[in-house]
Amino acid sequence: MSKRDYYEVLGVPKNANEAEIKKAYRKLARQYHPDVNPNNPEAEANFKEVNEAFEALSNSEKRAQYDQFGHAGMGAGGFQGGANGAGFGGFGDLFDMFFGGSGFGMGGQPRGPQKGADLRYDMEISFEEAAFGLETDIEIPRTEECPTCQGTGAAAGTHPATCPKCRGTGQIQVQQNTAFGRFVNVRPCDRCEGEGKIIETPCRDCGGQGRLRKYRKINVKIPAGVDNGSRLRVSREGEAGTRGGPAGDLYVYIHVKTHKLFERHGNDVVCEIQVSFVQATLGGELEVPTLDGKVELKIPEGTQSGTSFRIKGRGIPHLRGTGRGDQHVRVKVMTPKKLSDRQRELLVEFAKAGGEEIHTDDKGFIKKVKDAFGV
Image 1 (cartoon, one colour):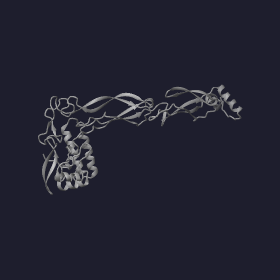
Image 2 (spheres, rainbow, N blue to C red):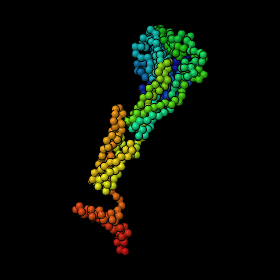
Image 3 (cartoon, rainbow, N blue to C red):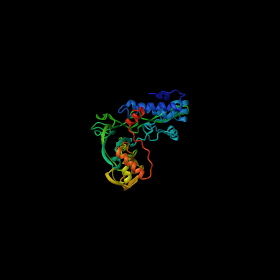
Image 4 (cartoon, rainbow, N blue to C red):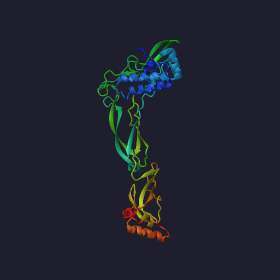
């Protein structure tokens, strides 16, 4: 089967610029990505074809060579990239063109064990949980090794067979006539898709893929002192590896809810309490909320609005180390909005006793109306 033109694969004209090629590639890569199309061989083949085309056209030198000689000028079966866009490059292409392959499988990827992809999980926790830590279970979707076939893809009682076309190498040699002469190129085997083995009787549960998509509960321990935006790595809890490779990691990103009383500043906690004019003037003991419960705070006479007091060791535990931050209590003095006649008289006497001249208007609203209309 002949290869399609790379420009046709990406759906761009031959005079397309770099930005147009990249935009087309991203759209198609998202459309055919294996994670979006699990157990879909056709989508997987399209994904590899799109990567191969992008590898050639995104590089100015390779693109110029392709424009002049077509697929024949690509060497070693083309620049086939895997999911991460990696492929053959530089002197490796020339070496493979003249002397054969370099031990790579389909898509320019090593045919040995491959680590699975990492996963991300966003977790929202309370202010108190961030301060004192949390142990909980989360549920995530991920790809796991098929328990029925232990990842081989073969049905019970059977085993993958060596590919008869490539004899287990995953590669075949093809002679090509190019503008430079006749060359022997090494390409991924089209029978086994570069794996070196074929599955004659696929596993009934995974369809021969060797992996399944499942939801898995994972126990996560959030340490005391984490902050908003903290990232926790849970080793080997990501996607399953391939060809016997290890699983990827799970990264838990922490989002801390805002608190109605407390604000966090590093490892310190800040809160604001309201006190009356009399309390601020005379001083005394106040009941103040903390992360550990209410405590008594003594404020001196004549405390001004905006004054802060420190309660040592009532802040956030240090994430790496021992001890805790402090709590800072900011005082806000409240001015009364309504006064009784007796309260007003006492305040006036208080001001006069201090030598302060007070000009007040003792007329009520009804009396003011009567005076205005001469009633």
